[in-house]
Image (cartoon, rainbow, N blue to C red; front, side, top):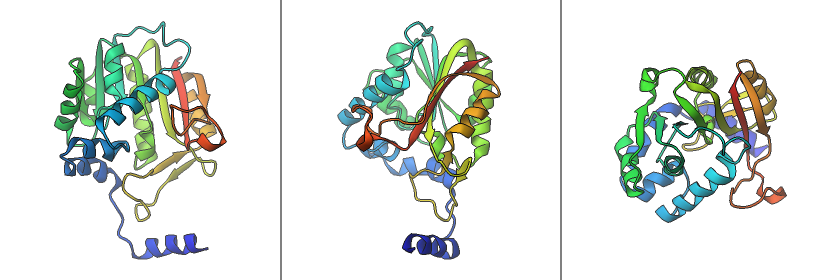
Length: 246
């Protein structure tokens, strides 16, 4: 009852927050590297970021049949944030690209340089159209869709993935799940910075993806901490879907 009352109070008296703008502008408020990385993915040190990134990459993002045989020429991350996952990606692929909307790309470049990455190109979302069709063997987005401000962003990226993915390539998307409505867009008056703003019902998202792609696998139950096995006490609020061009 108290929770409902707080929601009603916020809807009446709180100013709406521009969700997209928080992701564009806020990273520049964190000039210190650990604070910058922590804005995107909770961490207390660069070493912790490296360890978590390696675990997420190996145990979740590329842990699927077919990855070992996949051509490792070009890779794209949608929503690179601080750049933590571009580091392991750069070890597997000849060239990696990252797309994001925030205005602190130089800080991400700094983190990549700290890790000796020299085969990565960062682009703003507005520059995505300049990339040619069928450019990538692998496209991934790790718990980024949950920070979109509307379902239109989901549709935009799915259409771009269809254009950019190479035949035989894979796309792996991780997102926040809901068992309520098909899509839940958080009211800007109720939004809290860094929190989820978009939830997708797994069944709905599978059907949406299946219109244009061949689904290879999906999981509605993922571990909260990738370095520990899935269990009742380690079940996260995420789901994932892996797919290819038809």
